[in-house]
Length: 429
Image (cartoon, helix red, strand yellow):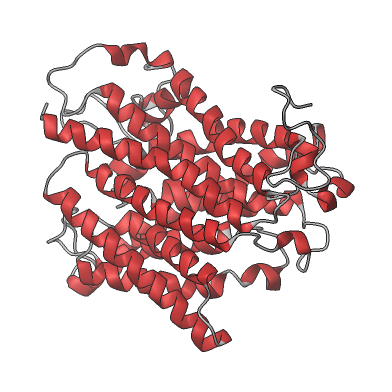
């Protein structure tokens, strides 16, 4: 093992971990002041539950040897409890425990992303149950499809997308962003619209500075997310790092310009959203394109996603924090544009249409995208329906209007005359 590579992936794992509280800040600033605690708890609570499941059996389902060689799911018992990762393997490029920890935070972030569609109206207990079941039935299998590669000697069989059709997804455009985005759509449809939607006062962002801070921290974390996925501190990680940086900047500017032309002003919320949309789009493509290709993908994502967030009003679904418009659409843009902008000079070594590669890679990217979208939407909808029919998804309408923080957590984020608890008490009831 190269100690520099190990150190880089250790640092990248910490950066991806940072994305969970960063997302909580980003989402928290976008909701009303009496919804922020619940939103942040959904992100951090859901991520914590998924981390526990990952240690128990999730890693085995995602990265165990494919059952039956079909590439659909990993062997449940291969890494059950992860004790197998304690042994040192001198022939491995990285410690198994380190790779498992790195991928753990991908599972945590993906689950937390879905929470944005349910802001302010979903029971916290129902969310926690949903998060655990969703990770088990949706994220872990799709992670196996996309991230588990077959070994060179054939002793390990990986996922059908990664090693079968060989779609390119460097860091999770399909498994993370499209998966979370379409799951958010399914959950929003089952959950229903917020009371007073779309003009409810509670739906307005209460702290734009928090949104900007969260977006900035997500940008920092994304370097670990993308460049860390090279799993080595070398040329590939360096190219990915550069592509991630320039794409994000292009997305911010493109969204701001689109807003200026359409609405007459470039907003801070738009700038933050454009940054994230471009980061989403470059995630699958960061190892496949040149810096010019990264600029194009970032700019296209920023402009298109600025329009896509309006679809929820036209189609009538309440995706509270635009998970669909940013993550589903942005992830789809980045995944498909690999088929156009990929260059063999980049680390993935494949040419797209614009570099003489024809339509083949575009077709492969489309098949992978369609499979993830169809599977994730269908299973997520069934999970949400089952929970709704048993314990119920929605909080009481009166609690929704008053603010979910009090109903779900017996506290407010900010001190008011209505504060229901003794702030000096060690156990606030």
